[in-house]
Length: 242
Image (cartoon, rainbow, N blue to C red; front, side, top):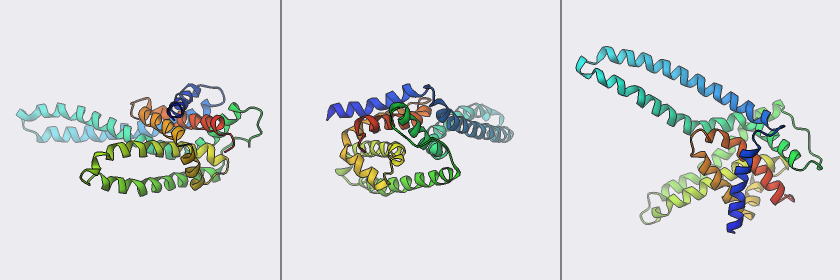
């Protein structure tokens, strides 16, 4: 069991090593570029609005409180970093969803060159439906998160709530990224959940490492494509019969 946990965790690190690989870079670079432009534009607009507010506030503050003005910018920068950290994963998954399916296909073709796979390409139907799949996973998350949140307020039981949240987060991340290679093989969302439960040590090892890397600033920007690659390699190698 412990070996399976470590094996699952190792596939996320393997995914990181695959990021610069030829044939994969385009699927990684495009959504990352789109997200960088969007967040860059958002931060630039927010900085401009905050600067106007700062100038307005300076006109209101008495001279002896003028020093408070210098505290606002560090607070703004800290707030912006926190917002980017938490919002990037959600927005990135929605934007990159149309690219992740073809990325999983390409990785599987590279990992199993002798196998016949469908041609990797983007189409308008995939672009339209991929965000809907993300919404479905979000609703599944909410359906389980609410009971866990309520347990956090129950005396005695709430002592184990942090552990349950970590396990649940690892499960959700594994489910999120396994959706692309398993979905390409025709497994429905319900079938994917049943399949992951059958291989739960690999699943939780993979999801736990993904969760850990997601908490590391800057590196968390690369976790999404690395996790898609890692999940694809894991299920191709560990459960090819799926």
